[in-house]
Image 1: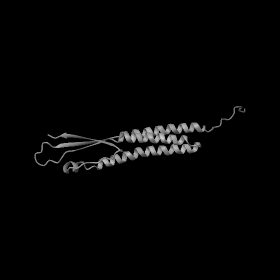
Image 2: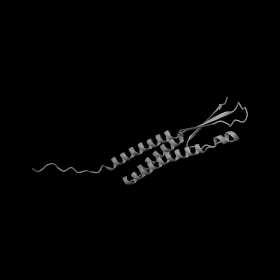
Image 3: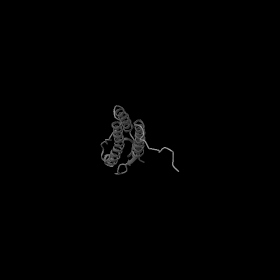
Image 4: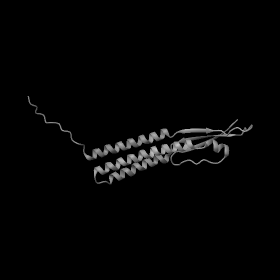
Length: 153
């Protein structure tokens, strides 16, 4: 017996379908990067002055690190700029390269901001500043830090 059915051949998807899939992947990876940044940029530290004598008016301080809206806005701006750059390319391959670069930039913004905010937050000399006076400088825009002072005793 011979088969009369035509052989099935695999064809490559059209260029516009590949571009749409890459844009969808870029948006999903950008959303995931923003989610990871938002989940991992949370921390809290507390310190109370060292007790010297019977000080009852001492004030403890709690610093809280949270995600910064500026980082999320930077990722969104990078996405829009990357989509605009890809749309101005005449060749589909060049547009795909522009979208790939945009994905790398968005992930670098999220991971870089996360690492800088966490390292800076944990390196703050909270106890020394509380004991000896002075101020703390926070690395905006990588993370938002709030402080809360509470009385002791």
